[in-house]
Length: 423
Image (cartoon, rainbow, N blue to C red):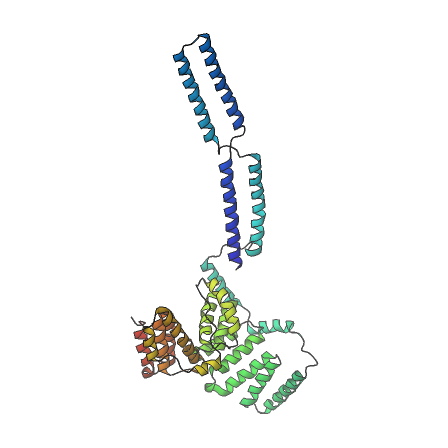
């Protein structure tokens, strides 16, 4: 918005200065032009009078007088033509020169003030390759988890002393610590410790307890278990995504590419390291697959338009998706009959119908999962809409989800072929 305002103001100022400059040139005239013209006219009038006197005295004849009158008249016309051509050339009048000088002296401070407010004084040109190198350097050299936690410990305010809920949680946490000393494999105890420590704001202790939960569960630990650990690490670091938290997020996404917590914090990581273009791509996907009441939805909807502008992408924020309860009430996504019926509608009607069904199905697959036929219907619906980019993304996800089972992947393969993704 600031850049748009700057461009509008700069364009208006430039047009105004050019218009006034052209006007000054059009109205310019030589100094003293009228005085010179009047003197020349007086000379020619005196010559005409002299011709008439000579004719009366008989010095010249009528024919000679007529020739002389014609010559003087021609000079009169030439003088008048030269005067007309001289208008608009030469130095401008004092008032016009003063106006031009005033505009220059006024525009320069105004331009400097505008640039100081909305520009980037002292910030040199930064080509794309250099920006990417700088972002990579920020990513590689950012502080580790211990350094971020130490920095947060210095800034963390003291907890209120008269909070009865806090006192209750502190007592419970103390009891859990004591109990777990003698029962180190108590899964539920470590889960309770992680939860209650987080409620107290002791995110380091919560992360340690959650790491113990994952260790106890072993191979049965889920993507959500790792996502909770990543979130505790990030909160302990004051919202910064450390290399250690990033490693946990990568584990989550390997287990579950659609994990909303991991996608949100991965997008946040790229925003913190200067790659807002990647943040936009991840958060756009997260927005489209999340229910409208997801905890990150407000932030995504507030950030996506600006991120798209930074990324250089044309983007219109879609309507807010339905809430989770509304999705459950809406039932499954489009059937094959729905898709075929949509093909017979007008372009606007088909787009409106299919977009609604696609949004419902996409949100349901993201929150509840779905059978191979559901993925196939989504790919086919996106193909009908002509949204091959999203259809391709869903097809790639389906290959990750069902790749180990060829018979489960078969419906999606057929839908991808029908949508023209395999050509």
